Picture (spheres, rainbow, N blue to C red):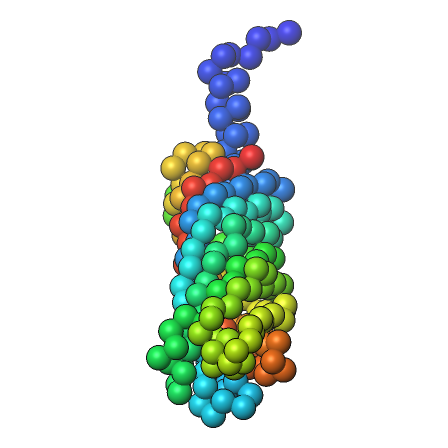
Length: 218
């Protein structure tokens, strides 16, 4: 049997590694930082004319796992440490300042299309998907109690909700395994906050997510 030159073996291994890292049927994971920037459109708190709310920015560590369905199409699940967001008064209650805060859990499932060849150094992509957002640890301030329940204590809850998600991003290949990934993710998300006093307020949160991550191809 004729021996296969060592250079050929090394070449085949390198080629297979490149296919593994970039092509259909492969997995990748990434870890990075995600900034959660709500674009709020608030209704009035019932019984409080022009009493509205706003939601502040937050951020945290996130991770994701992606699977290449083809050389161009992929599916990705992203999840992360829930950011803590301040809720503030607006309109006629703007001087109240912070009235509550909450943690936001929003795992995202995304179908993506990646442009360029599988071995391209730079690959822009677009995506569309959905999220189920859950609000936990809702804590109210004495100011909210003063506004809605003088002499008592007002608590609050926020409805969980499904949302629609888009994505525009790109990856930059450092080598056959490691890459940098960045994306902007607009979300369409509506919810309702309920106060223990029986009052409520409808809110379009519509956050814009901006993230940057380091990734690895398996």
